[in-house]
Image 1 (cartoon, rainbow, N blue to C red):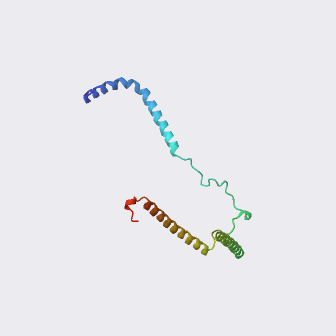
Image 2 (cartoon, rainbow, N blue to C red; image 1 turned 120 degrees about the vertical axis):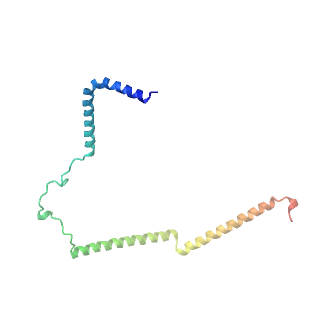
Image 3 (cartoon, rainbow, N blue to C red; image 1 turned 90 degrees about the vertical axis):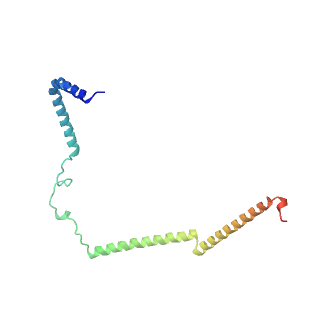
Length: 149
């Protein structure tokens, strides 16, 4: 391992040996830095866009291409309201048809309540039967000497 003093001495000997290469290395390094800078700038810059970009030529509007007034006439407002009312009515009719279809599939409220009550009774009966079956099985597994018959 070299000491710092040995490193400095080697460096002082190497610099004069590299001196003849300086005229060739400096221009190449400068050219490489310049090219890298141009590439960096080209990536950062976006081409400038004109203020009327995408608009084409601006021409004065003639009366036949003027935009309509944002004000709505009474007749237009009435037509719009009638259109909205028809749309709301169609939606209400569709909701009513869907609800009646669901009622037909599921039955009335009373039918659904009766079915829920029957399911609950069936669940209770099933639990009772299961408990009775387990008790019978447990009673059969008791040895005869321990039975209280």
